[in-house]
Image (cartoon, rainbow, N blue to C red; front, side, top):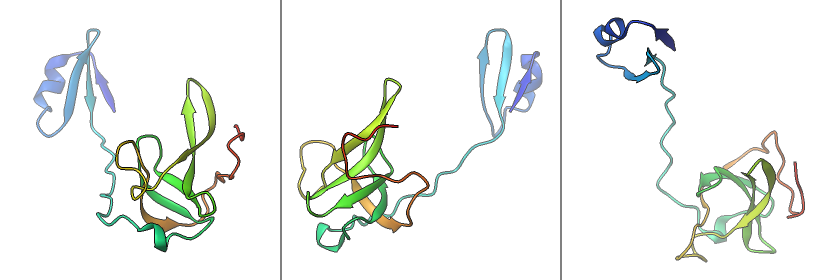
Length: 121
């Protein structure tokens, strides 16, 4: 990322970049992170393994752990500076509110997700 005091310089290089003007300087964004597309197939509940971690999608998480005994996923959530464990349902059980859509099983992440809702970090 480069910051130029002269907006004219950045405007000359604007083609193909994202740019915006902030407080007298012109901020040019030259690097973009590409996020790989998620698969379209949601893993059915019957194929989920107890205790396994899954990459997927919901409003507050991209990795969650399946608890077959409770029939829900556990994931870390951070809200107002506090981090805690939250549960969320599979889309087969939830058609009205947010649900975790698992796409693929992943190895154990560096931050384990326990099956205790009282856990905090």
